[in-house]
Image (cartoon, rainbow, N blue to C red; front, side, top):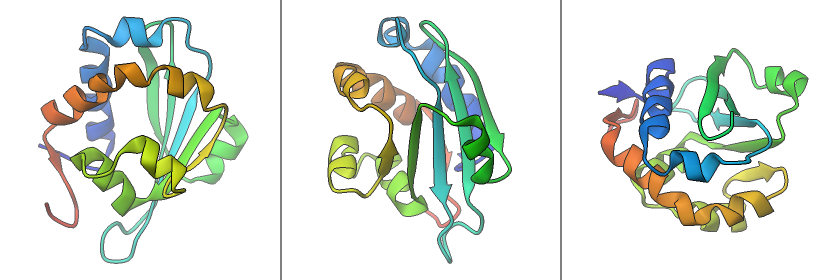
Length: 141
């Protein structure tokens, strides 16, 4: 059981993603790194959690936790997703559709969305990873 968000949770998510049979096809030819900010929420998550992910050709090459959201400004990731903790939790639990979350601006996205939309056919990878990833949330189930 890994606590979300944490370095251990991130490492396990990367391991499961890279071992997924569709991962190589979904990542083929991908360009650009990702930043994600899980914003703190009183009573739910005390401190914002910041991640930088570098996909390689056909797999995730590097994923690391950064100390502060400002650290992403220096890295200037091609994609940046930012949302309150409760929105990320709903995505992980499968109670919020990622496309709907972006369209309704529950997630703030920066970057060219077209390559992401083109890869929506591989969203089963995320479904399988989140199903296999035993996640514990700081504010309970």
